[in-house]
Length: 62
Image (tube, rainbow, N blue to C red; front, side, top):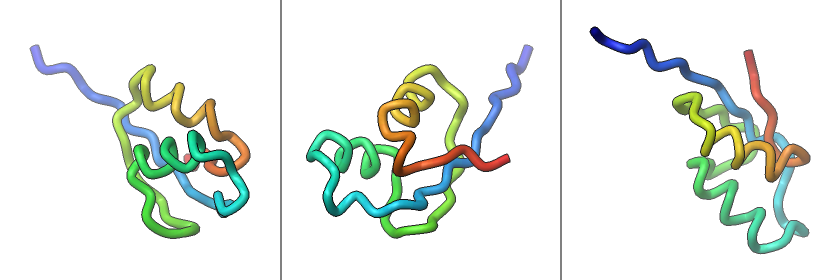
């Protein structure tokens, strides 16, 4: 049986210029390259954890 992979859309909406290096690495790890960019990722616990680490920089868009 084929499992349906759920996807979430994440938007990078605040600059990480003054953020700690760890936060910058998380944003880059999510695949963002520019401000206000929206990416679609699989809804996994690891991706949710990354989003939870930087809620002040990214948001989940429905």
